[in-house]
Every structure is written in structure tokens, then in C-alpha cells.
Image: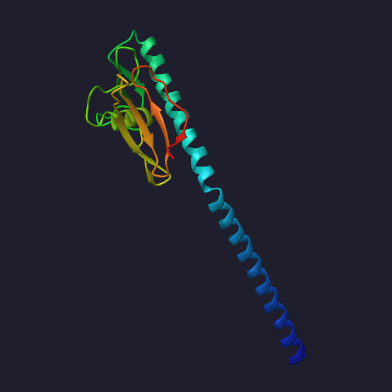
Length: 168
């Protein structure tokens, strides 16, 4: 091979490498653009899934309450090892059999912890847990919300979990 042929060959491969790098950069840029464009929809869909899981677990605890002849604490299998070394967790319920920890300052946070067995986090965002007491409404309820405005509520007196809504 002459030096001219070697130079042409290295020039071709350098051009091919540059074309591949530009194509990969364009694909990455378009993926990032579409990800950020649809990020709010992904967050809403994921948080709606969290609300459904919360509702299903509350319903399961209520069903266990019926099967156990309506005790004050429902014992359910936990996904985590407890401090006593066992795998069962005792969840406090109210007279109607719904998860409720009473009139505690952090009652909504404790309810989340009992039901979900996870910290108040969703996709590295903190989930706000607030006890809502309105004058027109006699029964307080818990509201779980994301900083972006999505929230769902949990009625402690009847176990009803709302769908995810936007605050603004």
C-alpha cells in the first residue's frame, strides 16, 4: 500500500467515525427531548399506580380484619424483617376496620408507612403527607402529594382512596 492509499483509508474511517458519533448524538438529543416533554405524564401515571397500590393494600388489610374477627390490630405478612426478628407487622385499624393510627400528629405519615412499608418517596421526590381537617367536613382525611402538584386522598373513616388529581 502506498502512503496515498493509507492516508485515504484513514481519512475514510475518520469520516465514518464522525458520522456515527453525530448520529448517536442526534438520537440521544431526541430521546432527552421527548423524555422531558413527557415527564409530567410519566410522573402522573406512576403516581396513579402508587395510589392504586395504596388502595389495594388498604382493602387487603380491611379484608384481613374481617377474617380475623375484627381485632384492633391486623397482623399481616411484611416484606421486611421487623425489629423483633419476625416477618409480621401489626397494623392499627379503627372500629370500621380501616387503617388508622388515631389522632396522632404524624398520623398520615404513619398510615403510609404501615400500608406501603416504604418511606415517603416517589422517584427521589418526597411525598407530602398532610392531615386535612375542614370545618365543613367533620371527618379529617389524609392527603398524599408530590411537589409537582399531583395528590390523592385517603378517607380514614371509610377506607376510600381517591384518584390522582392536580392541585393547580
